[in-house]
Length: 471
Image 1 (cartoon, one colour):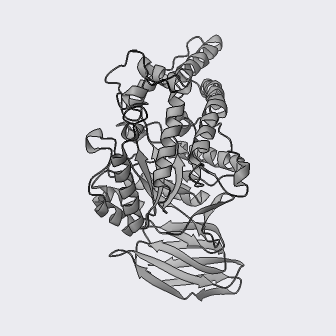
Image 2 (image 1 turned 120 degrees about the vertical axis):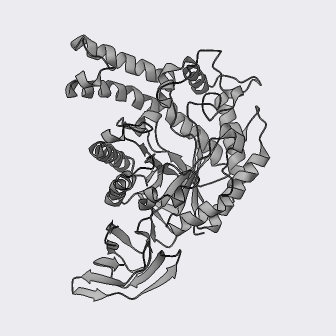
Image 3 (image 1 turned 30 degrees about the vertical axis):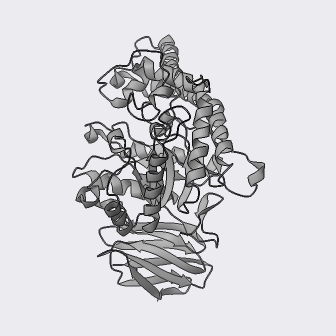
């Protein structure tokens, strides 16, 4: 597969074609399955036919290093086999070290030996799984000890173990040509700082409004909500600027011994909501002129993982991702939305997917839907994940929009050269609209699936032109 490089805020091929990555998360959290879904070839073939060209592939610390300093090479071999299988179906891979609730003893992530909770209390049966981040003394203690680099039973600090583990991973996997980046940790949780931040913010609001109660959101005024979030955001961003960036620099130092592929960075777990990230750019003089960092934020509405989807707010999602765009512009980094969606299979699912597709179109972003589960490729409630888009554009892609109902794709380009477009329909005609009016464009078609195609066309003009593909 062609190498993907970073130029400014875009992904490109070495010869300058702009790349969009349209993907899905593949993360098996089941330890009994060895953290790997079986029989993925059929799924990867379906992804290819759906026009997907990226998977965010979850691996687990518990899988890689089950005992201190002992690496499970059989697990890593299966990981590598899966990545190489993905390459056979033209799928790029973002390697994600996944965790939820820090460790596998609570949900998934770190091995037991690295979850130094000192026997603290862990509640069972939280209404929402992520409530345990604030309710579990065990998770908070384990996270605090991780960030403090507390020593494991072998006398080596947890952060040092983590960096050495990443060295092992990268050394073993770096020759996989389709890997585009290394994600050090999914949604890092900051430990006691989180609960302290929420508590301190509550006390500050109560000084002005004694009746303030987070458990009664209907009684909270917009002004109180804004002040509360302002206080919390300040503390969370301080964690990002200091502890998290130090962590990213440590992992980059480990990774860059064996690879020049970028580090994938997003921000703390609460950055998946409306709390703005405080991360910065990684600096590496030895990689001058080469992109070493991808910004990969997550974004969810507050109803995620609940049964309250009748309260889903498209307006909230639009505001949330407008904020991610602002962060991207400040960082001046290419962006992949690392997680979005998590939609149940319902009659309304495709409407929510199409809404997010329009946001991706607006910002010309790459993304990975959360998440794959076996069989969903045959579920019509997720059919809108299959969409037309420009996969590779010679020159500059200015805008595009796919009308699924009309089977119509419109793109605005400043281009000269050959472009590649995925279409989940059989194209009838391709036309260009420029300064001299509308004209037919010569194109060729490569069959991908029963009703899906790659459409190739070449243009000689470098001025702005509108390309329309009709099915």
